[in-house]
Image 1 (cartoon, rainbow, N blue to C red):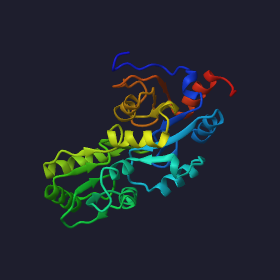
Image 2 (cartoon, rainbow, N blue to C red):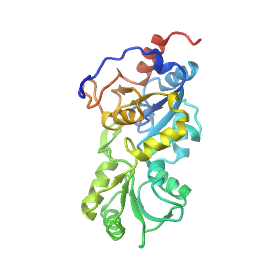
Image 3 (cartoon, rainbow, N blue to C red):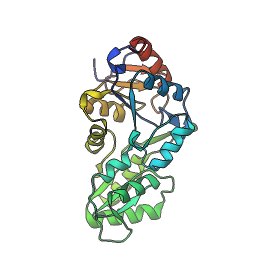
Length: 274
């Protein structure tokens, strides 16, 4: 398959024979917290055939509790071990006791503080970390760029240029990170999908590598490349930032309108649980 080719959704028993699916949240499970289609039924059907689900998001703004509350409102039961974010990946790049400036929401603050990182707006700092927030302004840009120049290290939770919502695409973390990188003159380290820090955390969370079956997402450049890094097939859904019919930049094993349609197709191909 060429790098730009996609395939129609087709059944494959291997992806639903137990094991774990890595499933994106924004654009796959919900849009701005609003569930997409029959997502609760889809997750329930997966679990009914013995598939575990690890929800992995590049959105660093919500805390773990907020992510779990959103899943609950969508009808999906999950615990802290079932969710992983780019905030966790960014925090993994720093050590207990290091000092950092940051731009972001509660999720990034929580992950950094859980790691033992001291958050400050005053030098000296070891790094500046940029995540997603809708409160970004000129003063934050000035402070972040100044701190980053003082230490020479800029970390981004991800480089997604846009963030999907029911009303359309908003500027994403990548847009904020680009502003700080330009103003500071630094090249950022990126932690989230599909980069090494997040890949490492997924592998740790999954356990034995043969348990990983499929990555499901709405962005080939992040979710699709993550699947390549993990060595598993990629399923693209058209419910987020990639409209139906848009060619993919990476090979696509399965494609569907949304998660519900994908699960129905693959579970039907697998047959009843043994």
